[in-house]
Length: 593
Ligand code: AGP
Image (cartoon, rainbow, N blue to C red; front, side, top):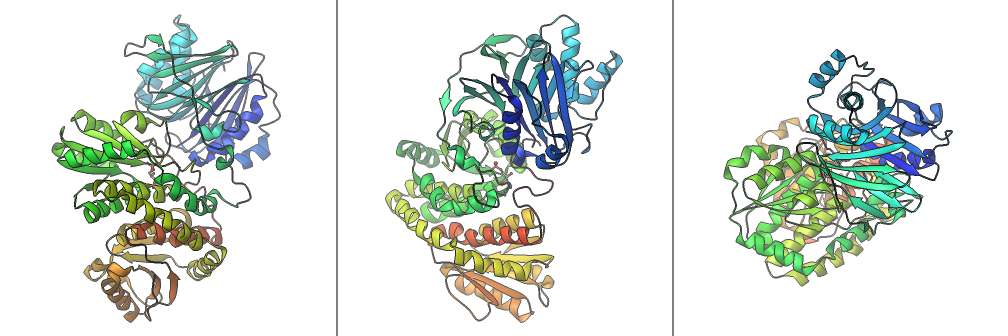
């Protein structure tokens, strides 16, 4: 959803901005641009394409400067063109802006600014911001005042880094989109995400909405902007984060996705290390609430479906999993006795945050499961548990899905007073994941991917805990290999989908001990219609054309069974010539409606 970065200090900005963009590229990769401020002038380089493509054409590194901004774009307003790539400037190239988010009232503002004589050069909403600041400064406001006034005039979401080339200052403003401040002894960083500057500093200040950072070479000042656009200086705590810079690097791996799939051995045990007092709080709240909703999107929603099965199975409590963007349609049943369990890797997903805010307005309590500490969801929640996965860079969520399920299993076990038992099972799963991701297992999956690579449709079936697992497998395959994949509850096949099964149609059947008889009979129905059955299960069956052996892990089957499906999606993408880390049209963190 666009990545933004800014740096000011006494090191060469071009290197810092370029490295930062490399780590932010997962947020948007249809165009990229940089701006460097030098002797009160600005050098802008931008074009359509991925960072390495545009850099080899324009060379982002050949300018020496101490102030810079960068942007990688996931287009929302305005087509993918060079003109629409960021940064954008005012009429006189004094105000330079990079932006992540959507300014909803931009047309109205643009028309008004055009009437006042401003000259627009792009179709973006972002450009409005640079001209609005220019206009306010013309009317006598300081740079800081103009930025704070503009922040209250725009409607929508924005994380902005704004440079003033004459004053050699940077301003960062957060309005609904993520923005963090990095602090080091050689300069200051503003970025959408911590990995952008993790190579340079681990000292971070998390910003809240309507906070504004003013950076010049002497230091930083932070202000809150009140509703009448008045600025109030605030003190903020500097956190030292424990993420390792290496975790945000690909190292010797071809892609982040495969690195992150393999990291699941550790991710599940790291996720299981939780403060018992926090689990107690979650558990008490669950037991006291009248209604419990899970709210999440995409992969995190699939984890919430697993969570709903687990809550029912382990502690007999019913929960309602809802896709975050659908939540507003359930609002009439929310009140102060409702508990919302929001699940989000990024903690910045717009749909999730909107659902949470709606629920809070009705008096509901918000407990969350989040990977990114300091993200907006952590501020919006009454309490939260962290996944402890480190940064997940691949657009396809892998290790955080497993971590989410670990946490949901732990919560359910805590409520059922079976916490130690639950934790032991998670530790036991480590060896299983180690084997499922071993070189020989990977090679076996690669062979199946070779068989499937030219198929245009495939189906997945499962029951119980393996139904959401099938949904998550289908999402992974669609998202990065662009093969149409659809998941069904095994029992639903006969209610319609079976008519699509004919000679050579592949069906991946996920079968565990609990669903053995029923899903096997579905697999046989497929076989009888000449479909190709790929069985994923602890046991073999004659209905299988291919068999991926996965040991029985009972309640943790959703983790064990998703590993081969993540690998299959990965190899399908690679064999079909696609970059699994940067699937077309997508972005890691969806901060728009
Ligand atoms: C999954 O592979 C996705 N890229 C996507 O569905 C993701 O899970 C979804 O956008 C939710 O993100 P979140 O967990 O950061 O809220």
